[in-house]
Length: 186
Image (cartoon, rainbow, N blue to C red; front, side, top):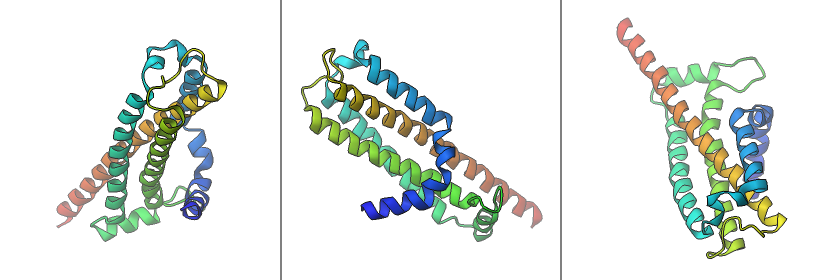
């Protein structure tokens, strides 16, 4: 598992690293995760039980993970070979990944992030216990750091889900336009 994940990160995420970390959703997630870690004990959410938060997020992440895998599957089995070929040949520059590769990355990256969110929710639950509060006033720095990281990961996952949803809509629009042009040509 770790070898495959490392290979994926090297082959797919590394070439897109700066695009990932400089994106608005990553920066917003960092800022909100940091704010939650620093000042989250002042929010009403701080008094919620870990079990309630992790249960809700496990449910969300599992559903979003499934959606992302479905989107990836649709991208892999595009019904029109010419459309897939055009996406595979479309590049911003000669060193950049193709539009088809970028399409698959959107869904696979969102799935990986949701998988990490699932794992983080389980670890957070195991670390804190079911009766613990999310961020009690007297929480340790490690607890604040863990909650800040979990908040970052969850917000980033939600943003990635929205990006995957919008991407699927855009591909659908391009595909409909392709079908319309074929119909007009016939």
